[in-house]
Amino acid sequence: MRESIRRRLERLADRYEEVGRMLGDATLSGRSDRFRELSMEYARLEAVALRFRSFMALEDSARLAADMAKDADPEMRAMAEEEQAHLAEQLQSEEEALQRLLIPKDPHDDGNIFIEIRAGAGGDEAAIFAGDLFRMYTRYADSQGWKTEILSESRGEHGGYREVICRLVGQGAYSRLKFESGTHRVQRVPATEAQGRVHTSTCTVAILPELDTVEDVTIADADLRVDTYRSSGAGGQHVNKTDSAVRLTHIPTGIVVACQEERSQHKNRSRAMSLLKAKLLAGERERQQSQQAATRKLQVGTGDRSERIRTYNFPQGRLTDHRVELTLYKLDHIMTGDLDSVLAPLAREFEAEQLAELE
Image (tube, rainbow, N blue to C red; front, side, top):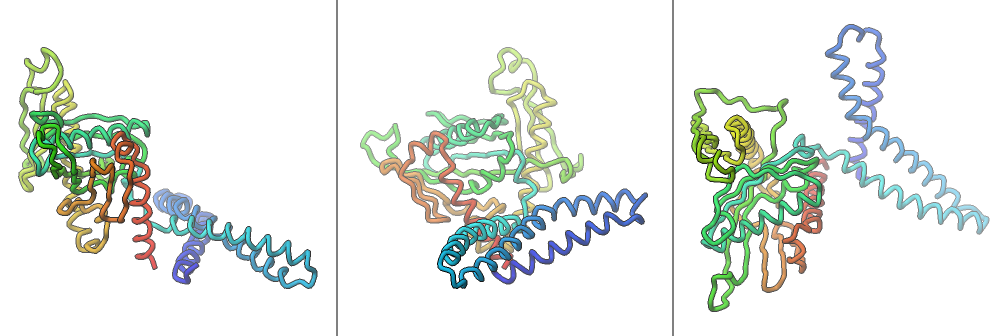
């Protein structure tokens, strides 16, 4: 284990013991705020401190095994060498687990997300590809047991979407899909291509975390324009009789969001407001993180979609993620929602980046 990581773990373990003693201090009685604050810190430190304690116990066992391996008795040496090999595997596994615990947890990782998919260059084919990406993500969501709610959509003339915005509701949705923001490029022969030529089209994807009420963004009434109109979506006679769709404009930034999928204007406004707040938070995070993360391959949390992140080559059945030099030849499976083999390398790269920063 690197010395810098060990020192950090030792400091956290010492702080864990210190907070434990403070919680036992009788003078805290009657100071509920301070007691609650220390209890929360103690709970945060517990997993790291206890795991580091176990790691140090393994190190002690490894030192004993090393001493036994010097014994004159051949049988004793053989037993010690076998124990050393076993302990080395355990130590490696525990060290990796400890390093992961040191990585700062994104407060949004366990939460729901908004996905925005927009057709880019390529005309009708870009819209069709946007529809393919939408199905890919929603099928992955189904495989995870998540719920999909479409907030707004603008369909393409020959299928797919010019734009579609949906909400994915499920534990860990943001942690799984937060690296999908960017420009997605497709190379294939469009159905409308008579001469069989391969075309290149693009779509942009944005992943926005849904905010918790604890970190809610405040929007002044004077900064918000609310428009209502008749929905163009499903809903039968109700669609034609009521102005249930809602469009919100944040005047200072010019950000516009809309929701028309619910029959209730109140529900549409609530969904649109949640999306607007997510966009405002994402913009603020982009400003803060662009200075820190300019050299990161993944551009985590910046929403930077200026460069392509991935290419979907249908003639070759190949997917290439350009950030981690990942190439997979199972595009048909990926497009049906089998995304784990794509997402896992991105998560590992992110962990490696954060560990490098810790050191």
